[in-house]
Length: 474
Ligand SMILES: Cc1cc2nc3c(=O)[nH]c(=O)nc-3n(C[C@H](O)[C@H](O)[C@H](O)COP(=O)(O)OP(=O)(O)OC[C@H]3O[C@@H](n4cnc5c(N)ncnc54)[C@H](O)[C@@H]3O)c2cc1C
Image (tube, rainbow, N blue to C red; front, side, top):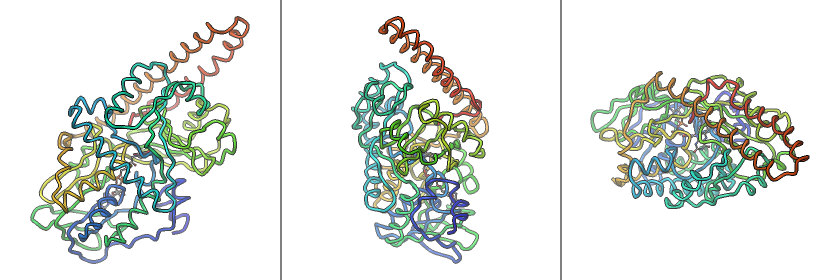
């Protein structure tokens, strides 16, 4: 592919610029009979294809565009334990034992990605995920850490001093360090999955949208522009793009578009500011997930919207976010800016299971899809080939209509309110910290500190202001 074709397929992403060589796959141009047809060549479809082919079954994967050209090749690359649903809400919903068992499945998904990441080129795993608090309220934090530990998650709590010795930002207080989490190059990971599936005999077709499915009968019929398929099983892995094919299933997902930038090389000043190799998040919604890539570039995502926009519109806001957190970096230039759309379920848990005889769904992974797509692909492969019933653990998370345009509008407003609340909490925490400092500082030094404080206040205000009516929590 030429550089222009790569950008057209994957967007102006740092991942496309650093992807491993991979030839495009042909479009389907003939009829086929197979045991399993997978629709969608993101991480869910590719893992399922690899796992079913690896068990010796005949598999075809159809991808409407390019493999991992959607969310799977455009995400921030954080491979995390658990699910998009908060651990405490999950326990409330299904009870502690079931939640623990679900977390163990999600952990197996994470381990699967790690194994692949260390055995294929260009995936570049970097250990750790630091989830940082911008407020000084440690009670909720301590309770949450305890619950994560009980669920089997390996974590350590970091004090404010420890956080600030690694991330040189006055915005930050406590953090949870997730020891087994890591980051990857998700596009290279997806391409490695595709290559592994093909080695085991899977056939993959790009530029091949499934136009219709007839799911009745033992053999399902799938129509594409260039050929027809008949398959014993169909696995729907189309995420938010399934609306043309299965509008009612697609209607259970809220599409949320998030914007990502990667700066120009920042040299030594980046290492001085961010001394953590893995992923860093300082918010429980879609803002400020960042990491160092390519040695001295900063990749940062945020500013989610429920209607997709041109990513160039968000460059200023995202670089503004960097400046608020790390003013010492000064103005940063941006080399790459792109958007990606994820599909959120109402309950924030993935949709995994059999919709009808021989029709399977693996979707709704939200912003937490790297470990959970790996988990889902394995669960569905075992279900189809071995009759394994693990997928039934996901039956409490039924398909719930996401509310169409009303759902999107409600989500947008909710995101706006969440951001306002967290900006207020952050301001209060900073005010308390300033008061504590004043109490400990001799009078002439306190005066100097007071002069410095409004700068930070202004910066925190500007973080909440530009384009906020467009924010949504993911
Ligand atoms: C900006 C961003 C940042 C994110 N960051 C993270 C992160 O750091 N960590 C994390 O765990 N998760 C993250 N996520 C979420 C994660 O990327 C997704 O949950 C995951 O990639 C979903 O994979 P998927 O295979 O279900 O869907 P997709 O990657 O969307 O793939 C679905 C594919 O199906 C194809 N398709 C649809 N309909 C048809 C059809 N009719 N015929 C043929 N093909 C079809 C589409 O073309 C598409 O390629 C992020 C997402 C975004 C957008």
